[in-house]
Length: 168
View 1: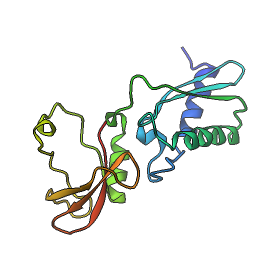
View 2 (view 1 turned 90 degrees about the vertical axis):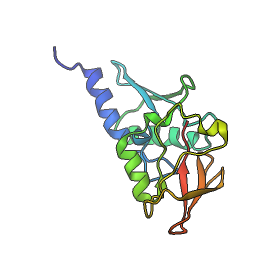
View 3 (view 1 turned 180 degrees about the vertical axis):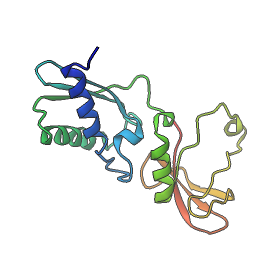
View 4 (view 1 turned 60 degrees about the vertical axis):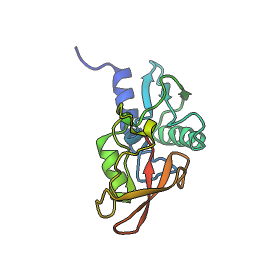
């Protein structure tokens, strides 16, 4: 069975969206973040793009929606609907490995994989690796970094500050 026209349109739309950058962390695309949940193409060429914000109060979501529409309209899609869904909630597990590597190369510690680690309940923290020198001798400076989805850390070895993309 061959690919029908709507499947091809959805595939083409996904390729286009893989180049749309996150406005707060421009080294990442929205595909790297894993916020694209679904793309449906209709027989008339209209598109429905379903996204989930990294957290429900993310101030970048309006800009991301505008950028999605603009990228798709520039590629010839005239009827684009962007739908935001909050459930299930986004998790950093949805981020691509390529995205996590891009964060590290950019000097932002990527999120650790989700776990059932109970250290946080006991006031302990997971060892976080410095994206600059690789040391795990790091300390949190602030629960809030340059954006609400990041925390500010400092490496005790190289003394460089860095953001940590928080786990959700």
